[in-house]
Length: 439
Image: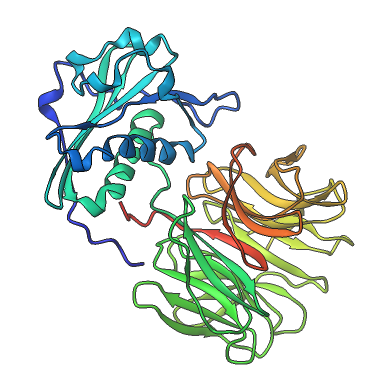
C-alpha cells in the first residue's frame, strides 16, 4: 500500500508542561463499556500566531476539521462553540491563559487549543489537549510540514487524543475494501475509515468478488472471472501486481488469512460440492477440512487460530457452525432464526458477527461463541456481510435501504451508523485492513 511521503515531524512540546505530568496512564473513556456515554470535548479556534491575515480562515478550519475527525469515531460530543463562555478572539493556547472553570461550566471534560504559523508554504502547528476538571495538560504536540499537509497534521493529533483518552489509537490509518457492482461488472474498491479517498483497486470489467485483506496489510485476495474461470488471485498492494494462486476450473472463494499471512481458508468445489480447505499461499497445497455432502462455506479463523466458524446447511437450513482448526469437533452455534450466514470472528474476543434473517429480512447479529441469545445490532432495511475493524470497536456492513445499496460503518454496539460509500448499483463483502500507518 502506498504511503504518503510527507515531510511531517512532531515533537512533544516540553516547554509548555508546567510541572503537570502527562496523563497517558489514565483511560478517560471506557468505550468498551455498554453504558459508555459520548465524551464532551471543547475545541477552540486555533490561534494565528503570526497574525497573517491571508491565513485567518485557517483558525476555525483546524478546529472544525479536528472536531469532524473525532466525531466520526462515535466516542465524542463536540461542544458547540456558541456555548463557550470565554472571548474566543482572546483565547490563549498555554496553560496559564486557560480559565478552566469556564470550560467545566459548559460541561466540557477536555479542551483542545492550538496555534499555527505560516511562512510561505511552510506550516508549524501546535496542538494541546487539557483535562479541564483537573486543570492540567494531557498531551501537547508540534507538527511541521507544508500547508497542503495540514489535514494529515490534524489527523495525527486526533490519533494522539484517542490514545490519551481511550488507551488506543484510532483507525484513521485503515481502509475498507469491498466489491462494487456497476454496469454489469463488479470490481474491488476501497475507501478510508472516514469515507475519504475512494479508489478502484481492480479494473477487469469482469466479475470480481470477495476481497480479503492479509493481516500484514500488504496483500488482498479475491475471486475473479477475468480469465474465464472463478480463480483465486492475490494482489501485492505496493507493486500492484497480481498472481493467480488457485485455479481448478470450479469455484474458489477466498476467506480469512492466517495470522502469519502464509495460509488462507478457502471454499472450493474442486472435488464436487463446496468444501472448506486451508490453502498454502506459497506452493498452493490444500488441506481439506470438511467432508460432508452438504454445502460448507464462509470459513473464518478465531483470533488464536484454534477454531474456525463456517456456514453449513447440513441441518436443513444455513446455520453457523464451529470446528477445530483441524476440521474436527464440529458443533452448531446458531439455533435462532432459519437462515444465518456470513460469520465474522471478533479480532480479540470469542464473539461472532453474522447476518441472520429477522422480521422477514436480514440484519447484523452478534453472538458469543459459548452460545446464548443473539444481539441484533441493525433494524433498518436489509443489513448484511459484517466485518470487524482491527480493534473490534466497529463493524462495516452492507446496507440496502430505500432501493439503494451502500457500505456503512457502525460502532460495535450498533450506534453511530454512517455511510462510507454509495453510488454504485450494489455492494457486497466489505473487509477491513489492519493499521497501514498512513499517519
